[in-house]
Image (tube, rainbow, N blue to C red; front, side, top):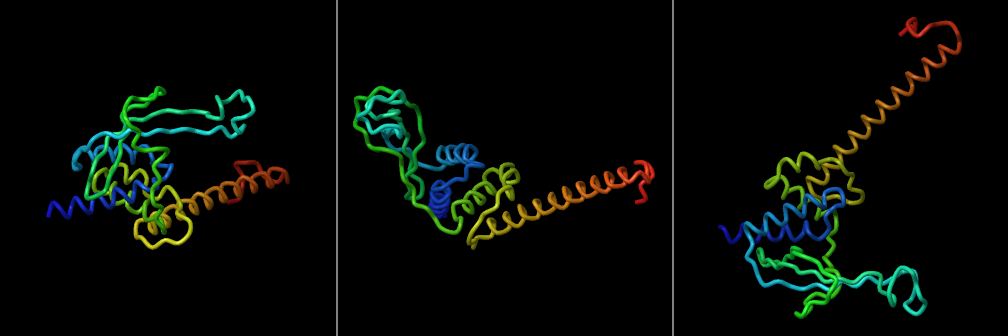
Length: 197
């Protein structure tokens, strides 16, 4: 039973990790680290090398933003975890001096992109079971555009649209009331206290 739980948790965490929304990225990474430390097995560390190329020049022309076409370069020590057959990384520290060990990952880690907002659906499920307070905080705060086939994404989008509609109606009513008050005041027939409604 534990094996199937870990496989399922690994898959859901892997899918959610492939594209966390900007709105909840920090809370997701905190939850990811907590789950990995509790359920995953630790492997050796990896070293990641990141080199950011300058967009202002091609490396041949002197530029005030970079050195020889490189805007920023650093190395990151990553702890590697295995959960349910999936590999995850958590950054430990970052430095600007090349380490003496072998670089295992060159550039950023590319994740598979899942269609139909599956990453957000997995995020909702993780928050529902492991961080209910964050689930209540984030559920229904963004609209998922495009095709939706998963239950939490569909319901969350509906809640977002209802909230927006209610706000628009309230704003419209408030503005309409203000315009009525202005038109009555300008006509000179009534004072503010004598508005007939």
